[in-house]
Length: 364
Image: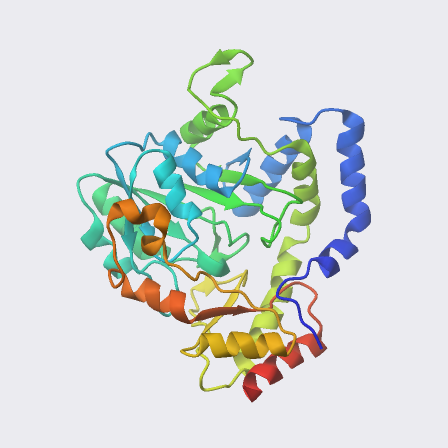
């Protein structure tokens, strides 16, 4: 038997006709950038997240960098990010000219450890980016308290957490602003690149709306040195279709995750830690083991797809060698990088496929 790490077919097959109709709608309207479909999606996604404003943009990286620009964070400033995340979180800080400051994660949750943040705050710190990694919310209450104490912006990286909840509030509504990615593999994915900023901050929303469109709110009149980062009409219409199903798709991932949590009992496997304050959407189901290479090879031989998130921590990436870090500087991030393995989880996995993954891992 074969079980792919990710399979779009059950999801896309179920909505195929709706997606084709969505494309026809935009095609026949002959308006492809900054039109009614984007306006409608922005309204619907803002309501879904429980905030007032949504601004569609080109991708998740742009979403974060636009938020930072909107808050005038740049050269001479510092922004705290987790040492364990996808590199886009740090790149957004670099793009605006600010300094990336890494803080270690909690080994249980893989998210930034709130108890380690305060030691990294300086007079130049302007914001903390809380990443909701793998679809589980960061421990936002403690981070928010620090932001209030030091007058910092709390920015959410929700790229992997569409619909996740922390104490009954959806991600995207937990800080001053949040950046989302609609990369195809996300729980809410476009059929190409896409992203969005959500916020209750009207001034930020107005500014970001202009910056994403060459710094302009009126054609040929430019208030900022902006960029071209716009979610197009076709992707917006596709996302409108998918948004209607997001909660049911997330619930199906929870069905699979519960079976993994209840039934995987191999003592060499460390399963994800569960916190009652968080409701994950299980974008990734990440286990840890000291024998990762062996497990990865074994599962491959049995036809089960896996992926490593992420094999090289950011402080050891060549792109950030200018920061002067060396191996051992962030041991928890390095431990996760050396032991994490993601196993299949996607909408529509059959009971037979779930059973096969569970049984195969338990027999290892």
